Each structure stands twice: as structure tokens, then as C-alpha cells.
Image (tube, rainbow, N blue to C red; front, top):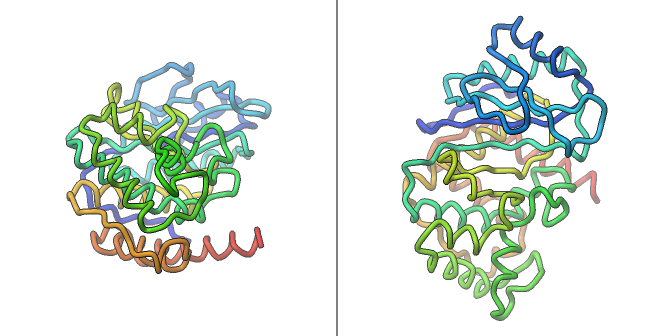
Length: 292
């Protein structure tokens, strides 16, 4: 079991996990008994010094809840593990109405960092799709719509239409459109459908974070910790101002080549363990077999 992560960054993060089948008061009491400071809260609650157990009307299932973590860093991952153990012991469940969102603290970012992150995300969105459930891919879920499709549809040029395969020239146009955004507001307009996008930039003005809403609901420790590791690695890459390049047409649309290129970049910043990279590659193969 891969229960260790290795994030070489000082960035803070927070997670939001949606589920059902546990009364909120029961969950608060159980978390408190395990040494986590927790409280029941309403949907609008914003006390990020404690674990908040919120209501969420979008969840289908009896006793729906959303777990919102305090502000964490890599040294507090043990709290995430403890929380997941508690939820598992209480038979917490998820379904397609549930999501797993992660916020990364990027208050120190300049517009160049945001542009690089969005370039990386739209460039590799199809690879990231292959690591998550089919219900969270492309535009299959209205709560996490495609950033790649958003920027493609916002342009009338050439091959930027509703397709998951683009030419090298199409990719250049996407990057050029991102490069024209000289403010976060313009970048948000060009690359997102507001809050309900795989990458949500609108939250930055309030919390100093970007929110990644791509992953399906889960209380599985391997899925949660590896996703923290992967998204943290992408943030690390963008924090270092490394350029995101357009790849040649011989790679576009080739899943194995795109996946290899994605992890080559991840390896470059030493922000993920080889075990986590191997886990994602195995997960991709598992999904390929299931949807074949």
C-alpha cells in the first residue's frame, strides 16, 4: 500500500471529501476521539483551523456530508490518514454525486505561474482524465467541466472545436490564448466555466488558493494521498517557472507518449516517489481494461 507522499514544496493545501451514510455528529465525535479537532458546520463555514463536517445538498444518499480539512502541509499528512481511517470504520460511502477537491495555497504566484499551470493542465488533461473515473472525464460532470474544452470552444480558429484530439497547431493556439491573459480574471474567463471546472481559479480572490475538482469522491487512502502528491507536483513545477512547451504532432493523441511526457516532467522536480508514479500507471491500465 502506498501511504507515503513526498512533496518537495512548502505550499499549503486543504482537501474536501464528499460522502454519505454517517450522521455528522457521529463523525465529529469519532474524529475528536482520534485526536483531530473537528466541529459540525454549515455549508458556508470557513473555520480552516479545524476539520469541518458540513452539509451539502448536492450529495445523493442518506446522511450526506462534506469533510473540509484545516489548512495542511506535507508534515500533517498523518491527519489525513487518521481521518480516512475514521470514515472507513464508520462505513462512509461515496457515489457519483460525490467529489474530492483539493486546494493549493498559491498566494505568492504571479500571473506567469498561473499561466504555466493552466498550460500544463490543459496539455495533460486527457492524461489526468485517464487516472479518474469516467464520470469525471471530459465534460461528463457538470461540477467539474473541462478546462481544455473551455479554452478550445472560446476560440473560433481552426481545429479548436469539440474534440479530444488536436493538432500541433491547435495546441499552439491554445497556449497563445493563455499567454494573452495579463490578469487572473482574464485567464479565468478564457480557461474555466467558473467555479465548476476541473481547475477553479475563481476561489483565489477569497482564499489565495487554486482548487482542483477533477477527482471522484473517495475515502481510499491510496487514491487520496497519491492525488495530493500528483497535484502538488504540478503546483511545484509551476512555482519553479519552468516553461511548458508544445509537443510535436507525433505525440498528440498518443496516450502512452502523453503519459510518459507527463511523468518525465514530474520526475524532473523530484516531487513524487517512483512508487506513486507506478501506482498511477497501473491505475490507468486498470481503467483501460474496465472501459474496453
